[in-house]
Image (tube, rainbow, N blue to C red):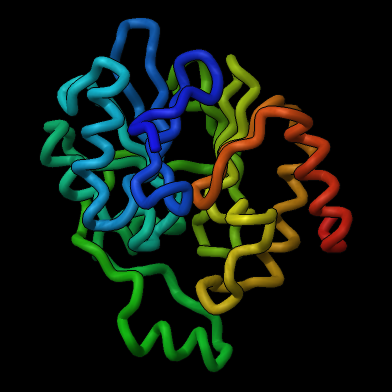
Length: 235
């Protein structure tokens, strides 16, 4: 599998565990890079390989954005902060404290959720927060990256839309492994809220949809997401 897959001009997907876990990279007009999510603890070498594939090095990374406080998104963040020389990462204000503490955001009260919580599953190295994001914020990333709060998988889970290329990043609001699905209920703070908040992804306009878990979709992307939401009674 290639270390870097271009989804739209200047926007790449770095597979860090096959298609199962992805880091997204935006290349700015000045050549600098913004990363979205940093995979598991073992992901940084693959992220660096992805950067190398597009002619970049860690020092080119100017910002790291995390979609939420789980170890398959924040596990490699602290190491990437060190490798890039950044002071920390950006995340939604409702998940920021978890990331700074290195603990996963709360799982739900189901039996499986309680098992996850007791096991400490999802913990990762504490990572400084330099920017606390809010819903509707427009980040100065490669022509504009809008923040859409889609809570439920975690309290501060966000999805992101790249305004210039009409690309949507779902984060973990929706998976695309083998087929489009909801995230596993045991790993959600509130699975019903996740299903409800994901409706915003059907309201946005975009041409390509990228997932942290699974390959991106570049043909009929919005229609495919809307179809999924309708089938799952979330639209």
